View 1 (cartoon, rainbow, N blue to C red):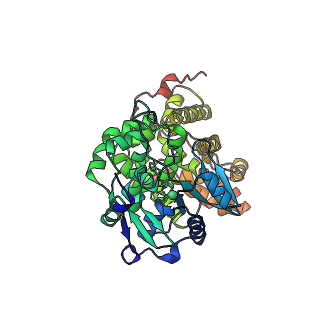
View 2: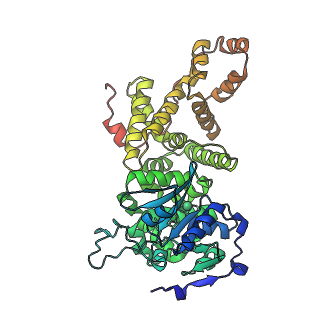
View 3: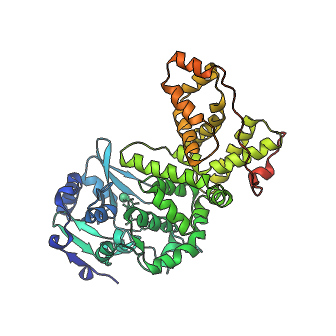
Length: 439
Ligand code: ATP
Ligand code: MG
C-alpha cells in the first residue's frame, strides 16, 4: 500500500514544469484551499501535458476538501452531480473543476461497488490523496503537482513512463479494464495523441477485452468517439482503433464497410476526411460531429440505397430508408444525438440533388442551410474516387459564377445519372433484409 512517504517528491530542477504555463486562477484556488488547511493539487491531463511541453486543455484540481467545504470557501462555486459531486468555480462563463479525493472501489465487504462482470457501478467514496492515485487510469495521468511548492508527487513511476513514452494502466490491467472498459479507448486515445507505446502487459489485454465495450452505455461511447476522432489526432487514432480490434465494437457498420469495399474508395474517404479534420482543428476551425457520422456510415447507406433502388424503390425513398436504418443500427452502439443525426441525414439526402442542373433547382440548392456541408461531402466523395462525374468541378464553378454565367452553365445541362451501381453485391444487412421496396 502506498503512503505519502513512498511518493517520489520531484523537485523543479528535475520536472521542469514552466511556472508561467500554469493557469493563474487554478494556482489561486489551490493556494486558497491550502491556506484553509486542505491538500490541493493540479492533477491528470494538465500535469501530463505541462511535463510534455504541451498546452493543457483544462486545469483540474484534486483536493482533500469535501464539496460543501469547497463551496463555503468560494462564492462563485456551484456543486454539480448527484451521486458524484464535483465543485465548479466560475469566472464568468469559464469554470475550474475541483474534485474531492476519491478512494478506489472496494468489492471486499459491504462495498458492492462492482457488478458481476467486475465493472464499477459506484465510485463515490471520498478518500485520501494516496487512494485517489490508485483510482486513476494510467501512470502518466496519476501525477500530482503542487504549483505553490512547485513540487511534483509521483507515487507510480509516472514520470519515467512519460519520459519513455509508455501508456501503462495502474494495477492489474485485466481487472482495471474490466472495471471500466472505456479505459481501452482512452489507452488508444493517449497512444495516438502523444505518439506513445502501450506497454506490453496493458496491450496484451486490449484486443481480447474489446468485447467489454458492448456493456458500456451508448451515450458514454458517443462522448468518447468525439474525443477520439475530434481531438486533433483523429486519423492516427482511427488507425490504432482498427489495429487493436476496437473499431468493430464502436463503429461496427464502418468496420464491416471497410471489409466489404474492394474499391478502396471508402477507406480513402475516411482517411481524407479525418486528415482534413485534424488540419482544421490545428488551424482552430470548427468541425461537425454530423459530418463525421455522414462519412463513417456512408458506404452502408449508399450500398443499401442502391439495393433498394435495384428492387424498384424510387431514389429519394431508398435513400431516406437506408439513412434511417444506418442511423438506427449505429445508435445501438454509440448514441447519435438527434441534433446531429438530422444534419447527417440531410447531408446524405442532398447528394442526389447535385445532379439537377436546371437554374431554378441549382440556385435553390445554394440557399439550403446544409448546402456547404453537403457540397464538402460530395467533393470528398469525388476526391476519394467515387464516380460522381464532374459534379465537384461544376458546383465549385457554379458557386462563384455570376447569374448570367450560371444560366449559361445550366443551359443544355441534363440531369445526371443516378447512384452508380457497384459491381460487387454485398452480403445482406439487417437493414436490407427488412427493407421492403413497396413500403
Ligand atoms: P485530456 O487532455 O484528453 O482531457 P485527461 O487525462 O485530462 O486528458 P480527462 O478525461 O479530462 O482526461 O480525465 C482527467 C483525469 O481523470 C485523468 O487524467 C485520469 O487521471 C482520471 N480519469 C479519467 N477517466 C478515467 C477513467 N475512465 N478511469 C480512471 N481514471 C480516469
Ligand atoms: Mg482533462
